[in-house]
Length: 417
Image 1 (cartoon, rainbow, N blue to C red):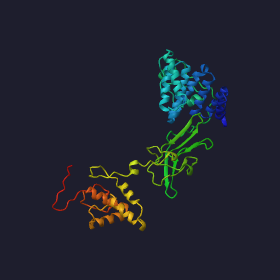
Image 2 (image 1 turned 30 degrees about the horizontal axis):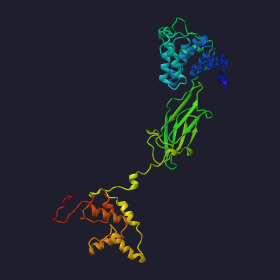
Image 3 (image 1 turned 90 degrees about the vertical axis):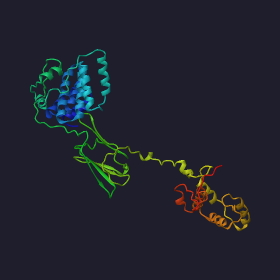
Image 4 (image 1 turned 180 degrees about the vertical axis):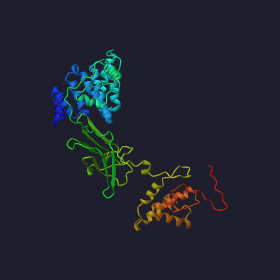
């Protein structure tokens, strides 16, 4: 990192706080409305000597809050409130610190260390330390006030805010920084960037473009998963910008997808797992990882076959088993014809109960030579209709119970045992 801000960040990481304060002051001279510079200098003040620098650290946190609010940067507003709370804690203004922590949580709940500071402040309050809260959410300054202060000009806050915010009659400390020569604003991407997408049916891909400027290619972290994409990179303030779309509308193939970082946007070119149009990029249900997708077991009722409805008093018949038993009977050869004839006499499915009746003989042969589906149809239709119907069409018979259809002039009645 080059320039006073870069040198200041380097000194801050090396815990050389005196140098960091000096370099951040020089950076503010060049860019008096860079919110992150004030936060960085506030951090250096508190870490160097909180008892010595707490008041000026609070001034820097106030300045950062004013600038962040003017630019509508909610995460930085939360971070500024967090450092206001820390400065107030070292000034033993615990009730004020508690209020600032609450405002910080509303705007940036992911701040590292926030829960610990809430506990520390509450412990002090529970112990009876500190005074009644007097701080206001708005420091009572404008962005022009911050610029004038950076130029070394006198700045007086709104009287009411000054009295409540500082708790004394002291005037805000003037900056000793030299007069600023230019003013630029650090760009921070919005929490939810604008996006657009288009699909290519020929390649079965969808391109999602996030409108973000100045993404550092060497520091960016990008993840493409089966059901989500995410992007993050560090900001000069020391915090991290993060964004994700989780879940996506449908699954993608990560190994066949890619991303491209451009000057004003980041493109995700995603290979769809299944062809089809996406009405949106955001889905409503989490997408399981491909390795976790396992075929569902076949229900036992399907494996065993259905129990078809029947009027039999002995219960439902397993027609599939009946057909399998019949279809697996060994073929009859000339050498075993006599033996098979003997078995047919005892076979419950094809025996001739009418003592050689030619009609029954015909149906016996028809049944014997039929395929399994035809046999099932004949057995089911004949049994369920109480002998009044005989069908060979299994596709029709399997739809439900075969009703009893007595001959014309006759009436079907229930049999009483």
